[in-house]
Amino acid sequence: MQIYIYCTTFSLCFKGYYDIICVMKIGNIEIKNNLILAPMAGVADMAFRELCIDYGAGFVVGEMVSAKGFTMGDRKSAELLRLSEKEKPAAIQLFGTSPEIMGEAAKEATRFDPDAIDINMGCPAPKVANTGAGSALMKDLPLAKQIIKSVVKSTDLPVTVKFRTGWDSESVNALELAKICEGEGAVAVTVHGRTRQQMYAFPIDYGTIAEVKRAVNIPVIGNGGIRDVQSAVKMFNETGCDGIMIAQGALGRPWLFQQIAAYLNNTIILPDPPLESQMLTMIKHIEKIVEYKGEKVGIREARKHAAWYLKGTRGAAAYRRKCGELNSVEDLKKLAAEVLINANNQNDM
Image (cartoon, rainbow, N blue to C red; front, side):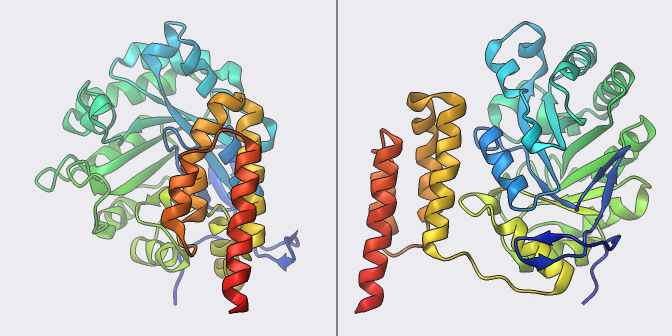
């Protein structure tokens, strides 16, 4: 099995294992490994980013932020840009259609002390794409070029770009966009192996990501469909990419970063943590959400996370309904206790 990664070896005791750390450079940033958390809107908040760093992610990207909203003083946009020292290194992600506003937003965003600025040219959501932003920029490469140029000119921070293979199967142009990114000074690109038309459906287009990797001299990060160790290894092997970006596969399973790292480093196959450890991680995660956002907002947002953690457990459908009724951290702890008791009872039968 061949894995195309650049590795530097040194000692590190990480959760009981001796690792070979796969160092990756994004511009002038050296990150401890090439496993990156994707900028999932409404999910990859500070609490989740910190948790994924704890479980071995080498780099995280914050939720996408409207450049227009941010530069107009929108408080929610500014809040989404906030980073903690615990989640470093981290990038912030901006989206928009105006080169001038994108450049201004990148310049102003430096006050949040990000390690890099990522430009969103891949979001498929209608509310973004219908404005001409996100993945819609793949239909207007001259505008995409001007946006990249403006952002790079406006900041001394490394600039990266995330995009899809194309708008649809008839207009796959990731290779052309990647060359534009490199030519305008972006230091890395992330290619999601689906078109906008596909949204999140399979299959993943590994071939286009591989073409991009062969065509440019900046790091190429593969994204799409990475839900376990096998799909992570497949992304590396099929594309030759420098790193991978993990999205939905980490929902309710932040330990996926640890599992992938253990395999890539030492071909160790780590099982999922015991159910008790999973429940403790869930509680820790949601307590952090509540700490950062307050209980009213935090618990409302935590309901979906709790459902993801409980996916696959015996009685998951009933537990998911209870997740939708959570109103406090105490409710969550009671649900976790119920899950463990029921699991133990099943094991005793």
